[in-house]
Length: 640
Image (tube, rainbow, N blue to C red):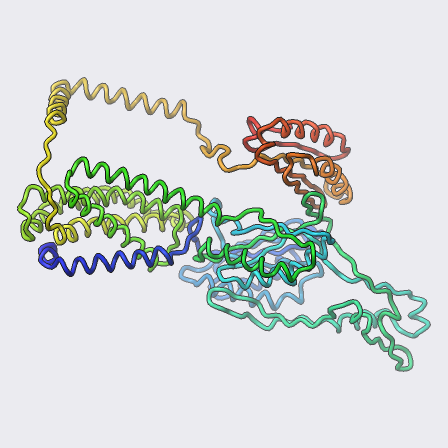
């Protein structure tokens, strides 16, 4: 093959250009992600029932769901965990089972159970299992707030915002946290109903018949899916009040003539506020394989389009955007890559001293990099830090193999046959050195489960880069290497110094081995004794925050949590240097999180607020309190 390619440089040139073009197209279409896409044969099913004990949740929610899931084809094992107000099920699938089809089957079975769930049970969700440590943060997180009640904000999000964002290509789901459940209270007077001959049960029958909710199936559009549900409910209090209620003697009464109808909100003893105002947290998740940057851009554009249609004063504040971090990492990678290429050019120019040979080495490296990019695109592996690390590890081998082959050209005539023969003789050395490097991939063959799914993209990218480096060095270079301009370069002083050093090391080999052993042993001892075995991330990229948590005994009045958190919240809201104050609570506990501006984080303000919040928190009776500071604004991240 080497000789054949050396005699047909036009064919090799055409193939090289095709590979470069394919690599460029793949680079533009290759989806970008922050972490590897992991799809294991496992699913997670979760549902909440606020206020219910673990026994009630297991009896009325967990057991029916588990029974329904076990009958789905492809399900091998189901484990459930029920707690106070929630149930979580871990579903293991049989080997070879399609995760997506199993997920659809589970959704269809659970849709039939919706009418049997107790009142108040909600939040049924089926999601892919992601190993710990590989959970991907929501693509974009927003805070929705305005001059409205928590229930109104939640209703706006559920009715207008979530459907619009869920329709954006690349979005797998939209989750809302906070707000309140909006409902209607119907209060009647028993004496009045007796006078009119209307039993109270008839009011319940009329209300139940006015609300029809029926699951029709699932609508699929590409990789996304949406459940289709028929809903026929009164859309206003006036429509509810106009419901006909049969009375005595066949007389028809309006519902609002028999009862008082008013709108009410139930926050289920939970709250979420930002800077003292009710708010809703909105989290947008990305579909596996979707481009993070393009999807986030489309989500921002959809919100910009939707904002003018919302009531006045409703605002969206971006809390976190993974696409910004990914774009920053890519810019940093491009900058470092340009510096590395410049360094390689400088070294090649000094060592080869032949512009034609330098261009040959760089061209072979470019073709070898374009090949793995096309392979990742065809295999459906998105670009992330692991795959880019695999390609980066292979770049050195690409340049090395090309440099070794081109350097051999200086010892043979500049003819096709001579270059082919030179490449054939150097092939065992190139192949051996590359395979020696590929040995590090062998352990990946024995990885199982979560680890295997996480590191297979890295190993794939590295293996593709190594394979392409061999092909480009021994096939491409002999074919297009005509006129390389290589000649023997002499470095007399360097050669003499190297020769003297080697002779002395060989002559005093026992001393050399002893010194080497001592140096390696000393370095190993320093690494064991001095290097801390903890995270090396430090506070890089983190903001300075201060958190105060209040926890009451189980069964306490939920109003105590809200009142205590509100006192701490009012103390820090509006202080210069405080950028944002979040307050969140459950029936038993609540916390306040203070985010400082960059300028205030470097001042004494975080320490002052920590001290004053600690004093105020200790005055709260009957509760366990804690105040902690995090981030670079605090010396050690400690608290009180």
